[in-house]
Image (cartoon, rainbow, N blue to C red):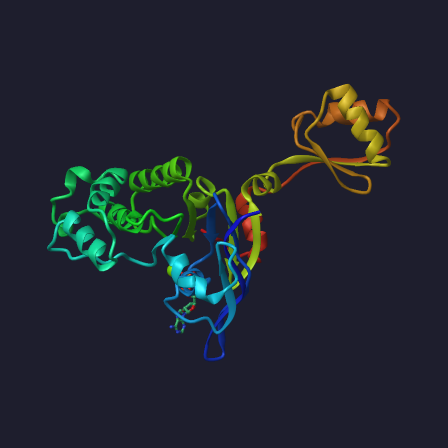
Length: 306
Ligand SMILES: Nc1ncnc2c1ncn2[C@@H]1O[C@H](COP(=O)(O)OP(=O)(O)OP(=O)(O)O)[C@@H](O)[C@H]1O
Ligand SMILES: [Mg+2]
């Protein structure tokens, strides 16, 4: 497994208050890692520590599988980030803003500017002053700037904040394209489940400074799927009969005497009859399972994630 970023026991305290506590984040190459949490959960604080903008109170950050602290400067050459709002010289054009950044960072080729502006769909507006840009255009310009040095990892703190649904969709498509075509790994924070749901391949849920869970998206989807919970006296034989008689394959043994069947959801009576006629004692059958939202509610102890 190749990790792009891991944090170990990452902690930030302000005075007595632990804002981020003992956080172990594991981001693999190719992940679109959705860093999900409510307002005030500690997302920005975590990302600021990762980017070296504030010092952790405790804990370590491991880049690209390298444990040594001396690797940090080199690691940053492989990372692009926007933490909070990207600042620009409003009276200068987009192209000039990027040119200033390019020189400041000592980056070689000038052509890269047109390349990144094309990538984010702003090439036609490159001579326009940034003050005439919409919020969505500014966000895309921020992404262009973060892309200038061809990073392998992009870290974006709430990149779609304040955008309208059309703008959010455009940015989402841009991320998916960058992930697919260039293999860029993403860490994207958000307080919106709906946004992460449509983008992330892996989700880390932060709540009150603690990482509650890290989960691959398929597993998350599976957890949130609905199923028939079937209570029987012999789950192995019951499974065999479901396979043979109802052609079922999408089920799991959820415990002794319990099967979760993810198909035939509207055929509980048939399932019951089939099992019973094949000598299985059926103690109960009920439609069960969570919606993704309910799952998050449960994780965060009832606080809605919006
Ligand atoms: N410099 C600081 N001093 C004291 N408390 C701070 C400081 N910076 C952040 N906090 C507190 O830490 C908590 C987490 O803040 P943070 O900005 O990391 O949350 P967030 O998840 O990014 O929230 P949002 O979704 O609103 O951006 C908040 O309660 C905030 O008030
Ligand atoms: Mg924040």
